[in-house]
Length: 230
Image 1 (cartoon, rainbow, N blue to C red):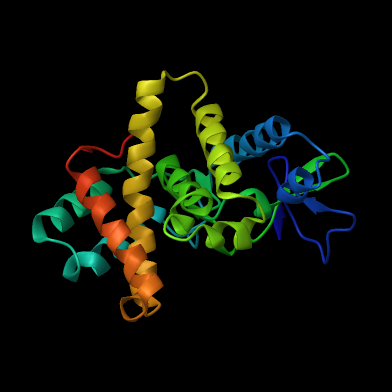
Image 2 (image 1 turned 90 degrees about the vertical axis):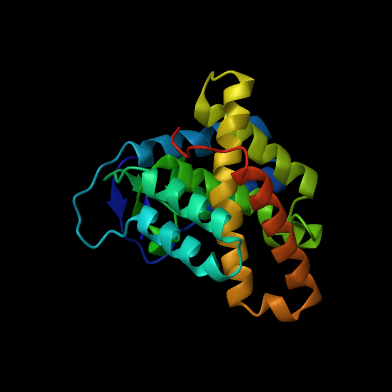
């Protein structure tokens, strides 16, 4: 199942298709063009509304992440985190939930979204958080995570995130962009910390480093961020 140009399609295979990431790595298209195409598709997805009752709410999923961390964060930080997520209004606008250049294919001049098992509805801030994690968050304490997953350097991944965020926000001043980035980071590090703990991270050196990194960021961010609304 994949999404392309405001509609769903089904196919057994994507013939002659390449991921956006491969287009970039193989230098078939410049970085600026690849990012522009990815954000055009993302905005198309986010503009799509659905009343499908089986579509999960990303807000509810994120509340579950926060609740999981209630035993791992100071009580005041947990309460603020949960309150920030609760404040985000429900919406029937679609999200992918794991949006990055590996999950976008290019075939016959058309951009196609794959890996639809994370499809959900929600506020764009949750999508931005997922993108931040893919390009920056997961590899923060070990850049090999970034290079092994994306096949590009940490610096290139950071540039993809920086340009994608600014193009998505389309003309917002830099101060506002950085505010929204912090909001995405709150959700992003909540997700990473919960995921790492669930995957036995408390018992491995790499996991401990990443959990400590997330905890440090959340402490700093929760002292600054008073709303997750865009």
